[in-house]
Length: 219
Image (cartoon, rainbow, N blue to C red; front, side, top):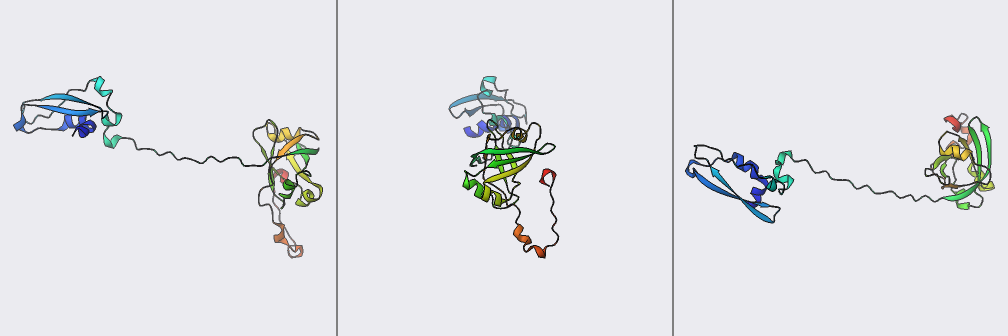
C-alpha cells in the first residue's frame, strides 16, 4: 500500500469518494519517500454527503524529495529512448612514404605528377586494374585526398611509378600537392577500387565500338 501511495498519492487524494458511513472520519495516509523514510499525512474528511476526499497541497520540502516520476501521470511520461551504440571504425590504412619524381604543368590548373614507388613493391603490386584510385596524405594535413591513378598497372610493374593528373583547387589538399617539388615526400595508401575490367572487351575485333564516359580531368 505504501508503494502504491508513493506513485499515486495525488490522484488518490483528489478522486477518492468515501462512503457516507465513514463521514466524518480521519484518514491517515502512509507513503514512502525514496524507499528510505516513511512520512504520514492526516486528512480530515468533510462531513458533507458525497463529498470528495481532498488533501492539502504537499509541502515543498516533501515535493522536493519525491521522485519526478511519482508526480507525473503514467500516460504523460515520456517514452524511454534507447541509445544505439555505433561501433567506432578505426583507420587501418597502411601509409607508405614515397618521393615525388616530377611535377609538370599539363594544362590550366592541371598538373602531371609522378611518384616513385620503386622502393615499395607491395604498393606497386596493389595496382592491378586501370581505373583504380588511392589516398594521398601530406605532412601536417589531417584530411587525405583521393586520387585516380592515371598510369596503367604495367608502368608500376616496369618502372615503379604512379602517375596522376591533378586539378589544383583552391583551399584543397590537391592545391598543396601541386605546390610541391621533386624530392618532396608524400604518403600513399594501397590502390583501391574495382577499376575497369578491360578483359570484358577482349578480343578487340569483337568490339569495334567502345564508348567511354568521364568527367573533368578524367578525360
